Image (cartoon, rainbow, N blue to C red; front, side, top):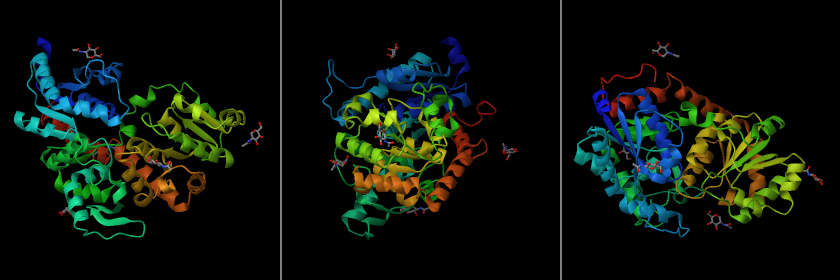
Length: 463
Ligand SMILES: *[C@@H]1O[C@H](CO)[C@@H](O)[C@H](O)[C@H]1NC(C)=O
Ligand SMILES: *[C@@H]1O[C@H](CO)[C@@H](O)[C@H](O)[C@H]1NC(C)=O
Ligand SMILES: *[C@@H]1O[C@H](CO)[C@@H](O)[C@H](O)[C@H]1NC(C)=O
Ligand SMILES: *[C@@H]1O[C@H](CO)[C@@H](O)[C@H](O)[C@H]1NC(C)=O
Ligand SMILES: *[C@@H]1O[C@H](CO)[C@@H](O)[C@H](O)[C@H]1NC(C)=O
């Protein structure tokens, strides 16, 4: 401890939002910062369950996890409502992060010099202000959803006064600055629809209202993807910094995972750009009826597929489906796939996805078009971007898998029109350029290191 306080002068507190992919992305960011500035101490405040999963493998010496409560009472039994866990956590989060900061300061003997938070944690700006340290709000999702939350008051005002004009598909022109149009139903819930008073919606609303006070707002994206949104947010936020896509910059997470179900070997025997890779993320299960519709359409259209899904859902497949498709070599179902590697295999023709932002970034990085079936949160606006703004895929017609809509979507995307092909290639190219050592995202990252760690600090020469 004595040693540590001699060599380390700066101390960054990190506040994670312990749900879905948020903490893992935050740790990826913090690892980049910590390797760039080895003389800075990083204290990673997160729930014990999440920390246990994240820190199972050794990482940087200058990152230390601290456990805070998840707010669950002793003997808690989940009620099955996904927001319940979030609500319990939010009820204690502010106090717990304050307590965590005190513990980390005592433990290291160093005062906090900067707070880096998941921007979802809207209340954390007050803590940084009281401590009089820079507040850095990391947005782990897309620019479109950030803009929807940042402009919530403006959007509510425009829709309430009906000063909006709708297009043929119900899209509203100029609802979000920097986005030509969007449909109301595609905005994340809590902006104009859903329970606007829930703890979660309230927190995001507060975040939108206070984020302009942040010293920097890094985002896991690249500025060439959404130039107009980026331009607008850059005029409103301090140091709005596109520093992604993380999957193209920080390879260490994916590279270490072995292909235990031999997906790559199976793909080697498939035709170029023919396979539908289906994955709805770790946190969502397709409703059984839609699973059947999708499976039957794949079989009827003889579309080769690699389907990564939770084993618990295998029982919902139509009778004999697995046996038939596996025996014929047209399909493979696995409980887990090395997604980034799979997407980069030449056999993959389409990603069928829930529209989670990370999957989209991986698909763009690999140049694979998408079919989206959004579930919640930002999936809808992400899917809108894919279909209408970026032109690199489709949202499933009607929003659910039916045979008719699925057949149509597979045909359209797998036949890959010239325009879609050009658009996905262009975005792929821009993503790789941004992530290159001299690319925009790495330039922006250098600025972020200075904000978080302080200018004039000793940094690694080639971080
Ligand atoms: C925090 O949680 C981890 C994972 O369960 C555990 O190994 C560690 O001892 C805990 N730390 C403290 C200070 O309780
Ligand atoms: C961004 O949008 C806001 C709200 O419409 C507007 O006031 C501002 O001028 C825009 N900034 C830029 C750079 O276009
Ligand atoms: C799969 O094999 C079965 C016989 O086992 C055959 O009847 C069926 O037509 C085959 N399907 C495809 C898609 O090749
Ligand atoms: C379609 O999906 C939505 C959202 O996931 C769901 O609420 C609805 O029940 C589904 N409709 C049908 C017909 O499956
Ligand atoms: C990066 O930029 C610097 C200065 O602009 C230049 O000297 C260097 O050669 C570039 N490196 C690469 C890999 O492009």
